Length: 279
Image: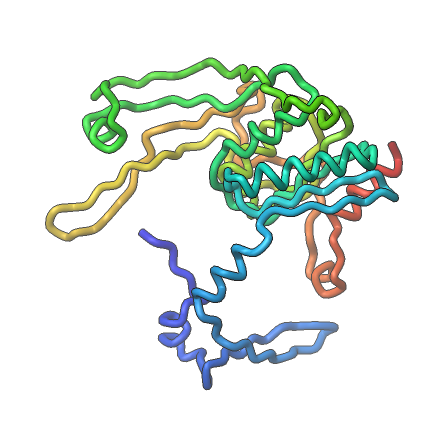
């Protein structure tokens, strides 16, 4: 069942919150309540805005820091080219610290992880594996040959196919910024860094377990027409010695407070700069 989103017009209308194409939002600031009128936004426009600059980077030569921001795990030419350009700038400016910004990333294609790792100076690394429950339904929807059985695939080692340009291979410090929105493949990204001891995680606990269930099969009841979904795989983290965990907890936990938001502060980034300055 689809999650209810009260920001959608039908729900806002049902709750009688819409007044002349606006919704009144009450916020508290400095012990005073302020009412703000927010206009309704067309969903198409909202999607267009969310698709803008989902991957980008900044280079801070003063702190020898490159920040690679990834808001969606989309594995395409845009991602690969942006990644290449980022590491060119890192090499050009002799950057010794890289932060992977995943605080707004809710997931997507996990291949983005392997592509990023091609620029990291390691020969191999541990990756996720899967446990699969084969069934008649899974065979029909995924075209498996097997129609019954539970099988664990235990080969975790990935041989790193580094980029051909050796000047772009990075051997400095790695950091990952996380939040409760860091989910699915973005969570995997942070977990792979943690479980291979490749860097430091900074921020808030992620939005799902390091080892979790996924790859849903779709079903529909014949009479009621209700649709439901059932996972048929368990994704197992690279280092199972770190299980069980209900979230990936950062090495350095830094939470965003109301005061941070009101004062337009970025506590995770500020902490990152402090850590870099002490090294």
